[in-house]
Image: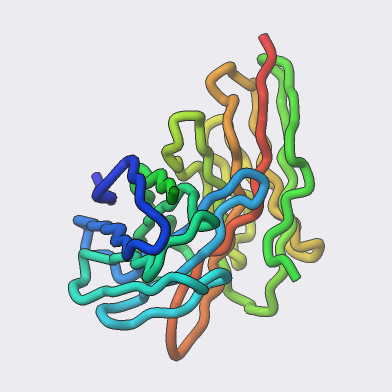
Length: 113
Length: 118
C-alpha cells in the first residue's frame, strides 16, 4: 500500500515562528502536493512538485515556500507564521500524468497563536 | 474562474436511496482526468473513482458511478443505495495534462457535505 506520512498530526506555533511541515512518501512518486483545507473553501493548492528540486506555485503560495531535495520528501515552510495560516494542511503524492490518483497523508492541523 | 465547481454545499439523502453529487469543470486541455474523493469526519482522503477525458464509457466502482457528460463539462458522482457510512464530504478534482513541464496538477472543488438519514 502507498503510504504518505506527515510528520505531525497537530501543531501549535507562535506568530512569527518559522514552521516546517514534512511529508514523506514511499512509492517513488514523481508528483507531490501541499494543500490547505479550510471550511467552505475546499482544498486549495499551495505548491506542487513534479520532480526533485522542481516546483510550481499553486493558487495560494504567498507566505509559503517548499523544498524537495529528495524524491520521497516534500517540505512546506511557513517563513513567518501568521494567525491566518491556521488551517489543516494536507500532503499528497502521485505518479505523473493526468490519469493517476493522488494518495494523501493524514493531515496536519496547524494552529498559530 | 473556478476550474472545478461543486454547487451543492450540503445534501441530505435517505438511507438506501440513490444520490447525485454535481461537479462541473473548466479546461481547454483535450487530455485530463476527473476524480472523486471522500473525506469522512476522521479527515482521511479516500479515492473513489476516476474518469479519463477519452474514456467512452462512464466509470463505475461498486456503488459509485460517474455520469460523465463531456460536452457539458460535467462529471457527477452517483451513489446508489446510500448507507449511513456514506455521510462525509465529497470532493471533485481534475488533473490536466500539460506537456513540456509539470504534469498533472490536481485541482479540487469546494466539496459537498452529504448526510445520510436513517
